[in-house]
Image (tube, rainbow, N blue to C red; front, side, top):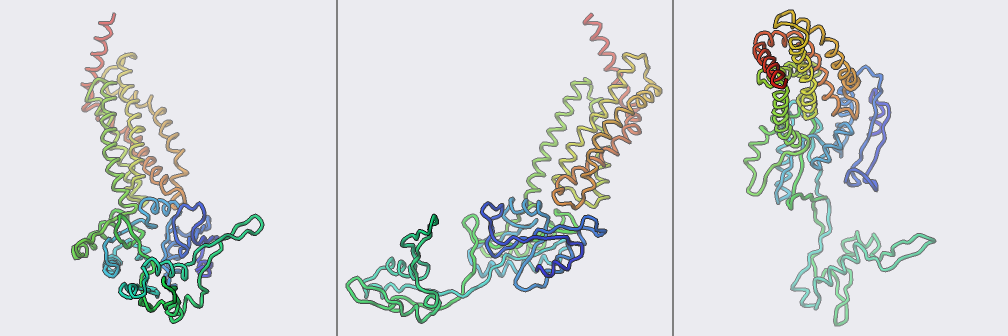
Length: 457
């Protein structure tokens, strides 16, 4: 693998970590290696092109399965569901042979789904095993118990710590067990002698059936059920679209599963669905809160809605920015939408509040001239607030594909796109809407304000 990676163009450096460190963030076994690579920052090729070269370089190496992902996304995937990929299909059941057969069937069904990459089934193979099956009837003949046989086999094969050896300041366990040639030789194991309770000895094969068979190299369980994982990443398409296609392909297989077997979709997709529901509820509550604050400020439903018209105007630019940068709607983008609501609403408050100020305190009338003057006087403050918010996000918006920017990049893209459209439409659409639909409501607010002043006097 390392020899092939050295030949990949624009791969600057890489380091390999095999197994589990003392304080590792992953719980992995020693047969798993993680390679962290860095790209040439001055390359003219895109990140996706380099990743595709990596996948091609490692695709035909026998005996391995690979998954290519950014470090932060990799950590998030593993943290969410224990699957080191964006999409994890967990198949639960009792029989390992059925699990493997159905997992292979699912892999073949989704292999040609557009956008699926790094598709793999959790490695599980049959390996040679030495089986020692105790014969209960023969045990009675020799006066032995199962505990006697289990203790004897455990000591012979795995070993038992009987003491400690001190070497300077270091302490080592003293382990007693059979030497490796005797543990690996089937005939030698059969001839092992067991001391009988009443004296004498008997060979191990006299009380147990000893033979070589095959068995699974690992059995993974979750929620007290055996399970096997089919996992994949996505490229070139949105995660939600890819998972919907995968679910459509898996559904017929899921219906054919025996009783007690079921499929669960987990990973970033599951987390995104859950987070989307929570964000949607919070977004609705936020809009309600914004409306109540605006109504309290203007004492007019019409003017409160006039301010909130800025939100769809901002969303136009945000959606356009996502489309132009070839992104999809993610949780990070939703967070950007929510942040954008406050900025867009603030600009609307500045402009409508100035309409009222000019009429109340500077002798203006409800005319087009007043609306034009308000727009001219509020142009600088609105542009200043929009620019300060947008310029600070430009470095993040230009960090497409950089490690560690997977979450901040969509947020910056959404906010900058929304700022551009909301600021532009603030002086093109809002004046017309106010002139057409908000004038009477504004007049009523000003008159009620004057009446309040008179009553106070």
